[in-house]
Length: 228
Image (cartoon, rainbow, N blue to C red; front, side, top):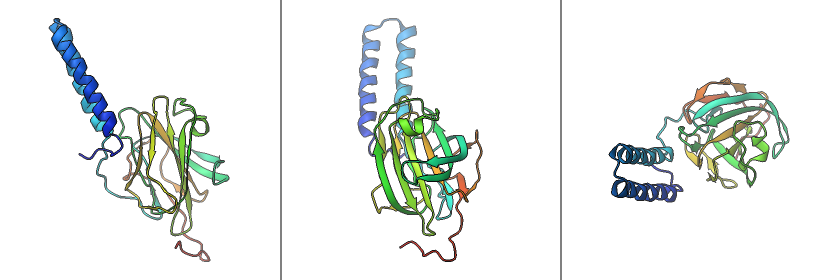
């Protein structure tokens, strides 16, 4: 099982903390009906934390035209919205909410090139609230495809998330299905698509990173020059 390379310290901290707590329980708490269940619960927490930060191997379904989900979770928003931070225009917004039990590794949604990346510090409102998109701590990453389509996605920290990791860099090549970062604890992904994209998911739908296609991008206009 592959673990996110930026998560070893957190996992080690959980293991050390749980090991110390288990030692105290088994050494000093003589009520077996209490110490053993609590110890088993702490072992479960260690296993859960390890699984939480894993980077699963997934079948690559996205490409230059088909937009795969950035994250595991539930679709909570599908609507027309104005993207105010970089694109500065109306887009189709698809948002995926991740709970505590979803894999929190994030993956590139399309093949292309990173044309913009920025980190924004902010609040930590619950991630499913609409204002979280602008007011919470988040990153903003824009990808331009070979056909010239621009797609922007935000990694948004939730009420418990305290660290966002993004492996984007200006002019970095993006390949759908490869890991692009991780959000540590409950959070949300907002994807902003061109208005003429065809959205293939609906609110309430459960999606899997890399394997669920969120939308199809429009073909390049006949006069458009290919991305170089």
